[in-house]
Image (tube, rainbow, N blue to C red; front, side, top):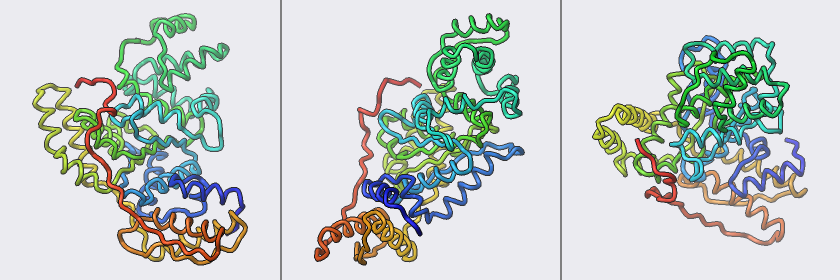
Length: 414
């Protein structure tokens, strides 16, 4: 393996921080074959023209430091190489899984286009070719009577093509696709100018519903621009354990939608990978008794909306219980290969011959990140003082699943 100094140093800095990047993944690869095989199936399904079921997604689970983020970065690199636009979204206070509006905005902002460095939505919009078969397919779909999408998407696509001479308004349409508001009065005026007044019925729609529809539309916009589809990677999904009761219910419903697929739009070239901790079921579904309390409390409301949410939340919790693919702990062979790769990486980064180091005792309870950090730290110290023999200790990190008021945001009603 030939390694250059700069990429090697970038990889080491990422591994020290526990936030793997392109260079770290290129150097180490991934040993999670079961997850990789399932991901390959999802990518193949997303581009299949004969598909009749939604692509759906994948839920992976692992403990802190087990390598979930490394796996996600590896999958991102694979998807980009296969021609997919990729968005990596970290679930946080600002980006709650229960809120499709915020997840959509983050997914658009974080999107990477294969071979491009600019704003993803701008690169996608500029790549549209109105005379191509892919664009014709998008146009037919968005204008079809059965499309599960509001008519303003058809109207904006029509106006975007008509208004290409008006760069400012064309940009406003692209910003609307990405999640910004577009006043209906402005859209109606442009439709009238284009001789399409009254062609599109433009009414009110909830922002939450509009966000879900934007995922459907943008995924097809991506294919119309010549790419394979859209891959969404959602990290730190375990944060939903700290949400309020209603936010957790909505988050479980979102887990169901992402993993089992959007049943209202089975043709979307869209797939997702969600990452959470391996003990979420024990700590939250059982520990907080969400599996029983959430459906029963929702059904006490005796409304159609609450009943729908209860059913979707139940389905999402079953996904977590039954469909989670675990990040496998490293066996001896995996540790040996990772050790050899890291040794070569450290040597290339600092132009030296790293000695063999002990690192951690190989125990079933140790995580891959602990081994990696111990080896790197010891080589760092030995490079400065060849006679030094460090002793590394580890400690377990326990996640807090208590409800956090600061995560609640604005008040919600069901």
